[in-house]
Image (tube, rainbow, N blue to C red; front, side):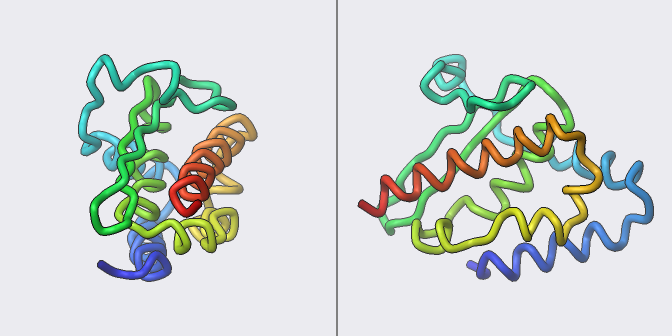
Length: 140
């Protein structure tokens, strides 16, 4: 699997090809359409991410090889797309790589920081905080 930085570079290149933010929003929404659905049981309070304006659920599945697989869903289209971006960066990685990665800088690279409302930015930060916390726990 490519390093997390390589995945970020690929995402960045995909965003670069799309001109304005209207096109990029459409692309982000499209990314969200490819998320695997969560079961009703997985849409539980325990999987809910706090600090998001929309409903966001995140499932963490430790794998046999020491990596963590993440799955997620939301009731908002744009947020589903943001989840898809987060999963693309973090899912399938080992905890030390997840914890060491500078997510805020990555979102800045993608231009998300300036394009998202404060509420969405906070939600994105909450998702990453949850992934990092799960990675910290898995590392312990």
